[in-house]
Length: 267
Image 1 (cartoon, rainbow, N blue to C red):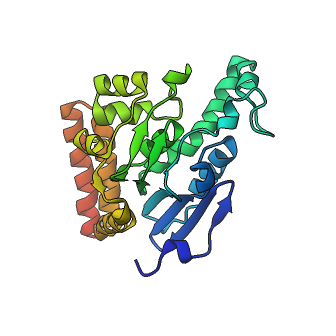
Image 2: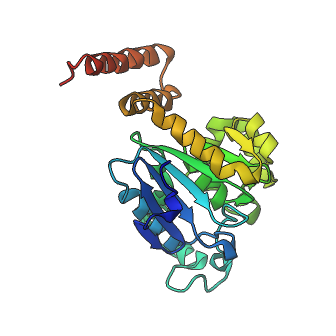
Image 3: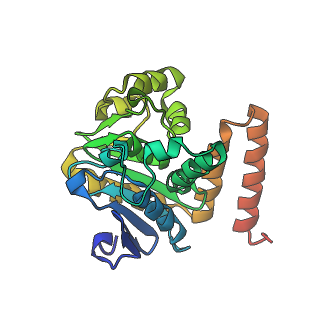
């Protein structure tokens, strides 16, 4: 990259989230290392806003966390009776009617949904602890590059809850039902070695090399024509919901669009 995204003026910088843009690469950084980038509704709203503020020039989005941990999960204050000031506590949420409670959780989930948009490829750079909501945020991205000290864990079930921030679908897709159930139900740590071996992570590197490895991956992704990447991503994302013959049909339609575009015959 011509310059470091961290050196550029932020497009967004609030509630523990900073968004910077360097031409085709955007960087979303969790900026509260003193609390191991603990998550809160305010942080989720800022993440949602970051997705809305992405310029059309952006092709790759890098998600990273400052400090020794990517994100240690929910802010512990959310588990107290009083909760976080200005936000509903868990007790407050439980007292809401079904429709309101559902709408509140759906709003929280918005912070985790935009990372797989067809027009971008998102990369989570994960070091140290990625627990609960932190694990699910890493799972929200298309790709994961991890440091050798990474420790994933899904602790919600151990606390009497379930993973509800969109993490269950990608987890099952990456590691399979049986392993996903075991990881969630036991709340155990998943190491860098296991995460690569099971397909949870694309690459593991020494912690000191994490940023460089992500930059190299981003550059490789940008080498291919944007429209071809968008079509390929759409094909792969839809493959698990199509039959073999349906996927063949989708491939033909995508390739027809690419051939006409390259020949200058697209509408």
